[in-house]
Every structure is written in C-alpha cells, then in structure tokens.
Amino acid sequence: MLAMATGSEKTFTTVAMIYRLLKSGYARRILFLSEYLFKVHEDQFRAEDDLNAFSAFIQANKEQIEALSILLQNPYQWNSAVLKEIRQILKKNAFEEERVRKAYMLSGQQALADIISMIKHADNAGCPLLTAEERVNRAISNILAKQAFTAEQRKWLEYIRQHLIVNLAIEPETFDLMPVFERHGGLSKARKVFGTELELMLAEINYELVA
Image: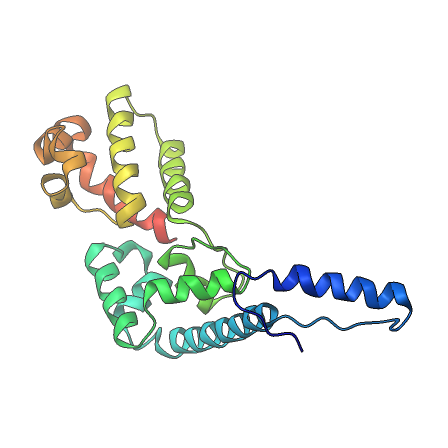
C-alpha cells in the first residue's frame, strides 16, 4: 500500500514501481487499485440508487399528484403553474432538480436533461432524455411545420423559443412580465402580430413541449 500526499505524484511513482517489479521478474502480474476509482464507482452506485428511488416515486404518485398526471397524461393542460408545482413537490420529497440531473449524469446518461425528460424517463425508460434547448427546438419546429408564418411572426417565435429554453412553459401574461417580450412591445404587440390565434398557438406550443 502506498500513501502519499495529494499532488505528490502518487500515480507516477506507483507506475514506476510497477514497471521495475515487472522488468525485474519479481512479479508477473500486479493489481493496481486507486482510491479515485473506488470513489467513481461509489458515486455511480449512489446515482443509480437515487434514480431508482426517483422512478419509484414518480410511478407511485403519477395518478395521485395532479401536476404529474398533467405532465404524463394530459399535456394540453401544461403551463407554468404546473411546472412550478412539480418543482415544489420534487424538492419537498428530496428530489431536487439538480440532484436528479446529477444522478443522470453520473450514471452515464444525458448530463443536462431537462426536468420534463427526467420525469417522463422515470415513468418510462423508453422516453428520451433531452436538454431544454433540444425539447424547445423540437416543439417550435413542430409548430412551424403546421402552418405558414410571416417574417415578423417567425421573429416573435424566436423570442418565444429563447424564453422557453429557460422556462419550459408560456402563457399570454408572460409577454408583459419577461424582458425578452417587454422590450419588443409586450402582450399588446404580440396580439397584433399573431391576432386572435395567439392563445391557441401558445396552448399548442405548451402541448408540444410535453407531448
């Protein structure tokens, strides 16, 4: 056993010793164990335990907790309030978003998975783990494929995309609250750009985000 201070080139010294032992013929095979490797495996096992517990929690409560039920079974009701409630519920039950995300990363899966992906994957392992940007880009692409938009409308859809990458849901009142919209005229301007279709389009975007 070799014990040396941090930064004192333990690995280099150990490899040199192993080389000399092998070259001299004193040893034919040497088992090299590193504390770092044990730490990595320990973290991986802990992450898998956390993910199993998270999956069990989601599956046990997806019918009882309305916000989870909306996300997993009724995406047309998805909105910012539901997302906020989900985050509060997860935190209350020791499944903070960053903790679960770190567990996914340590288990070798998507390092920046968004909260929607993590919950859907916990419920069904076949669901892909997406980053927030990947999820939003997919939703906006689906919206753009459904109908033609003017150049100005596309510009506003880009503002919406930027907002969603951080927030993952949107409502009409958002246009008078968030700087990305306020500096371009807020809700009144958005209504002029999209007309009477604004609310319906936002509902469709929210649906696409979690569908």
